Image 1 (cartoon, rainbow, N blue to C red):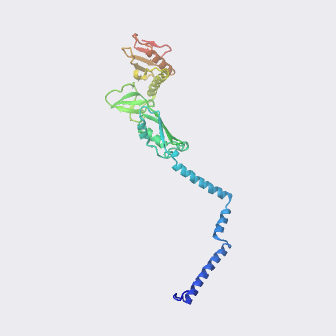
Image 2: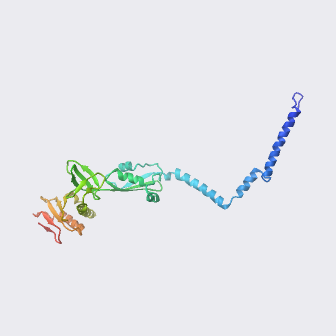
Image 3: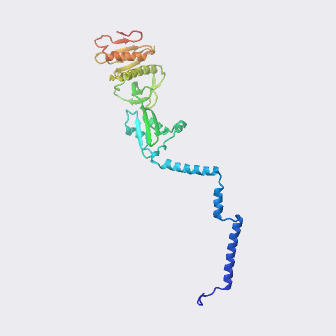
Length: 313
């Protein structure tokens, strides 16, 4: 130390030494409390003392974290394409608007609804939203498919008939759901059902009848007509049987009449239907008779199909 430097007072130096000694004493006491080992050594020993079960738990936790990151961030878990099928009345854009799902969203973000929907990973709420959007949609199946695909399978209702109501006409499907209520002009391309005890009609709900017996019979007959068309479609026969049915009339004695407008025949042909046990065969034969010109050049206007033989009077 140079002469110019000032020396510290002796009392101050003594205090500093005492403080340093106290700090060393504390460190020594801490080491003694830990068994005379350094903190790094203690940490290393704790790691080595972990059981196999603890290590497995740590590894599993890390794997879960990694898988979680992949699940939420990887592009394969994002909607990349949406496939729509079964829609004839509605365009693809209309179905997408009803579904309210978009590409880029997480593939499983819309899973939900009933317990079955969760177990099957179906978009239950999306399905319900589509079905409630329009009465022409009878059902929908919406589900994701890894990687990045969503499938929407639509089942549409088909209008098969209409019934007269006080404020116009109610267009109905096979399941009796009212598809439309029209005023003024009579609906074209579908037959009328007459003789039903109708109480009310509301769009999107089943026709309210005091008795469903007559309706069930009429719908069974119309279903057989649609079935005859479907069977003939396989042979590329384009004749549309349903559009040539003017009306189906139910009578209280369990007898039903069909009025037909047949190409090449100037007058209406009325068909009397009895039992429904063979109604599919009867309608298949009737369709064949129309397409092969059976009624042409015949004067009869009533075809009795209630017996084993069909008689035109």
